[in-house]
Length: 511
Image (cartoon, rainbow, N blue to C red; front, side):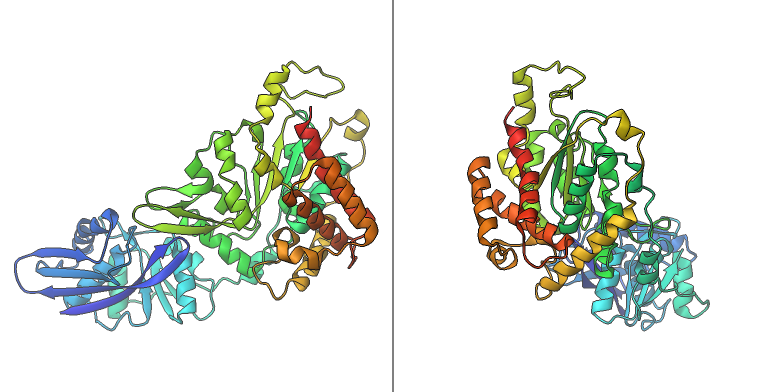
């Protein structure tokens, strides 16, 4: 007999439909699996055989041919176990062949027949939603992340025997309740607040500007000045995720296997904080079967590099292309995958290896050569992609014991208004929503300067030795400051503040 079951194949974050075709004929027992499967898919033969026998079902010892179509698409992972097993049960007459019409099925089988959660289910659910598939049969551990689209009925299954009984009509499985993104995002909260940070008003203002335009920031200062404390609170002043952004971020986490029963979806903007000993594949993604790295985990959020100068120079250089393009393509011999990586880079560093160069109270123990070698780890091209360079000085006792500043909610309200102005301005460009994403051809239209502002920027260009990218960066930051101010036209005061944030680069380079 012949049976066909619909499942999916995953490439990067995108799932596409795959049919599992099972044909069983009388003859000597044989199991053939074709359709470009990788090693983990080929191993399904042993898992499926043991799972069927241990589920009190009859394993068909006959000539079994299984085709994963279309044949040119490489199939990876273990989520083909369940459709293969159910296809064999259908082809052998143990389950009705029409039981899974209009249903996408996936899941990994244990040898005892129980089902294990698999990564990437949210991408498969998104595919079902786009292709108007009405039902999914998935492991119970994946049911919550799959049930986020209206019109898609998700059946959670714990065991192969349970799935077979359900398809035969011997038992009922209650569909997973649909999770409302609106409600999930409404109740998302932050544990950290800007009001916890004493002093550093200049740095707070700069981070507000950065948040309002999603600009990259580098903070330099001695140990204990508050760089990490400020950085960890950056997500709390960013506007909440939209439903579209939440689906994008959750898809990345689903493919990475970081969603499950405890964390169904990502509802707050990511804040990723990799250690400086991280590897290249860990930072940008990689592996034989490409997996997302930290830059993709930080998509639509913040990538925080603490002690940036401690990262190897070669590792930092890997950030240049994804910072520019907002995505990373990982190519391997078997396949290539593209992952999103539109993040805000937030970095902190000491001014020298000991941390006290230029400190008014503690002497620096480093030689000039050590300081130069330390700062050379941050190349000119990468520094050129950072819009705001701040000096964060040591706090005085008056600031430490002084009153708290504004709360994150107060700052976030202003940032949200600035985002709204930018999104209205770029409403015809869905991929370009914030000032940091302005391309060169659009800067002249969005960042109009009067004669006084043009003269000021030209003088700053000559004094600071700006590159073309640095020149455009100042205009983008000035546009963001004007948006925070509610101004349609960039004023001299807006431009002067933007130049001040860029001047930190000169002080970083010149000892």
